[in-house]
Length: 91
Picture 1 (spheres, rainbow, N blue to C red):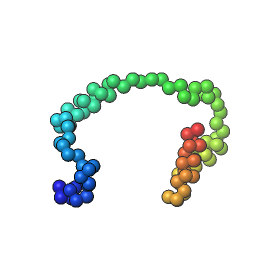
Picture 2: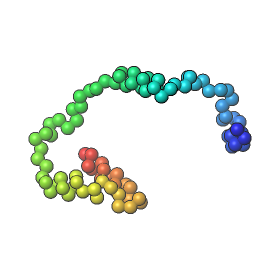
Picture 3: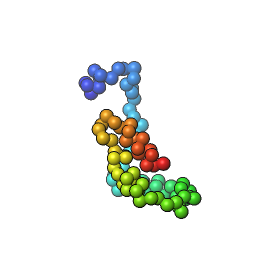
Picture 4: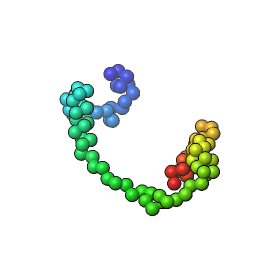
């Protein structure tokens, strides 16, 4: 409490208790999560339809899609290169 008092300014510190629901057990939470997830709807995606007869040359597949050099950074300082390659792979 002392740490909070000394580090958080009074004007931004919450002055009342949080209005939280009663805690759930793990099993209660899993049941709740299952109930919420059952509300999801599964839709069919049409992304990529129309390209199924496309022929991908083995050299492209091997040297671009299966070569991690295209989608991993050489160094931590070249993340933008990896991002561009990842985007190219996605496209």
